[in-house]
Image 1 (tube, rainbow, N blue to C red):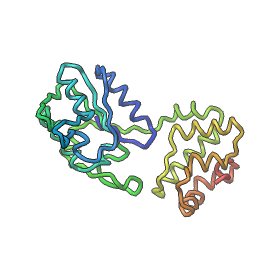
Image 2: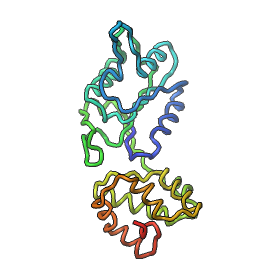
Image 3: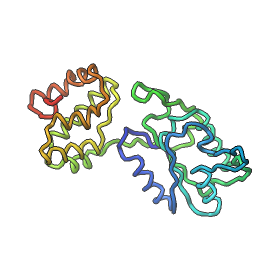
Image 4: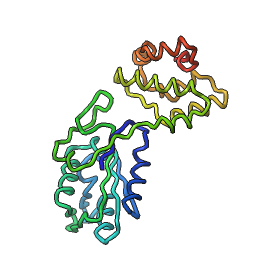
Amino acid sequence: LLMVGPAGSGKSYMAENVAKACGCTKMYTRSKVAFDTDLIGYMDAHSHYCPTALYRAMKRADGGEKTAYFLDEIFAGDTSCLIVINDLLSDGRMTFPNGEEFSAENLVIIAADNTSGCGATNQFNTRNKADASFLNRFGSVFVDYDKEIEKKLAGNYKDILEFVYAVRAAADKAEIDIVCSYRTIKCMRKYAEAGIPAVEAVEEFVYQNKLTEDDKDTLRQDAKITRLISKGNQYALAM
């Protein structure tokens, strides 16, 4: 299974539930693999094998235990990583550098990323492109933010929710790399309940101390943001 969606949309949480639904008794997780050795391990200078989460997952699965392996940000590493996973899915088994070979019959592979394997974007410029044969081995689902969850997180602070929706749309349109996730809404609500000024909430949870002044100006001038400013939304005014 390949889950694609924005940062903070709950892909990792969903992976845990998918593993449970598949009858897996344990899930091993690896994020941002850089090279194929992060998957298959390696022999050190003393001829000792250095195992990985994939090795442990496959060893357990080979022993008859239904096991899940979750690979987060699958397209962020070297393309050799995609080749390893592709070969595993194709052959149904894998031989590791120490000579051990395991079957993948009882292994459930779950992957996730912010992109769909189509290559780098302005927002995620380190992502690799996957070929069609690799993508065809996965069932793909898009995991977006759930509006009902967001309404519950915002509670009576509808101005926070309106603001987050507008910022997301403006950032996507301008391809500005910011994350307005469930956590953003939750934290902004806590600030509001504590009486902390809106300008501090925007700086901390929207700008996140990483946006340039040009990016901030671009967001401020977006039509959705200016509409909120005219309505008196305190968070839009705080921008």
